[in-house]
Image (cartoon, rainbow, N blue to C red):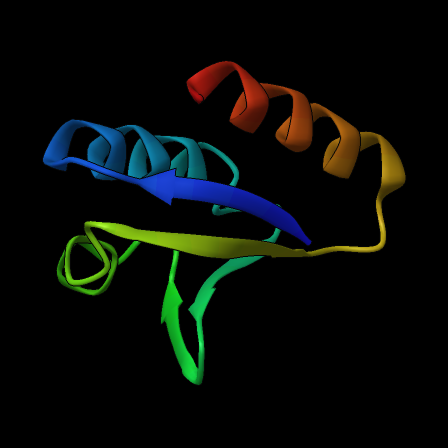
Length: 76
């Protein structure tokens, strides 16, 4: 699980673009409290603007997970 601050529309767009890049290879959930949204959902992700969220990439491919984590870190 990875942490990310969706502090603006721009940061939400960056997160959505990253999730869409990996969409064919894994499912990515964005969590805040009990709320879980699909990482590719524009409406879902933008509803979390102003919140610190947990990004949960669902994959068993450790290499892909590492690449995703590195790219997410570059967005911060």
